[in-house]
Image (cartoon, rainbow, N blue to C red):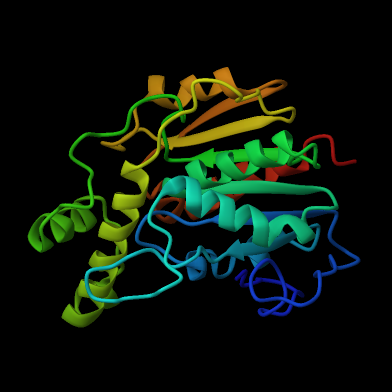
Length: 264
């Protein structure tokens, strides 16, 4: 399902929808946002107000992933299956100009959907923005797996400053976030960059990273240029893995700038 941050009803796009959402008249570009591991579509709450009426923000809810504490028969356990299901759900909404923003794991999912669009001969994104993730052809961190203990998962979350104060103060909510993170890390661990068939994205590719991010170096972020068939830009922010929360004004100013390029 896609939860929308502007004028699209929450039950219409890309999920259990029975109709294709219509872009608002004021919006010139629809921005699909893919969340980080352990996150949710609500990670993008308020983005519509920040980006203005010219951009319609559409946060994407990913299909359920397997969890030790839940048994969802519709859960997808691999990155390939997850990307395939997201592509299937989003397809009806990708017939007009659109952009992708993915944060951390969301960058990998967004890249996979863009590649499936290309392979099917369908409209590719008009902009592709990746935040806080190394280029998809690079190997992931070996220690980031779905086998982490509760303590290690919570340590990772807190070390990356990946949860807010209200969640940190609620043990039940912390366990739920840790479970989601572990499930997402398991899915990410199944990702293998295809040996063939990947094409450079035929759109501007913009990559954003935090200079203090322990998971993504400047060189790993810059390696995204391999996947750009046109304009490429790399922008460094102060802060860590969640730089977009630490420096909101800087982040939204840069995101607005790259989305507005060539839109006039």
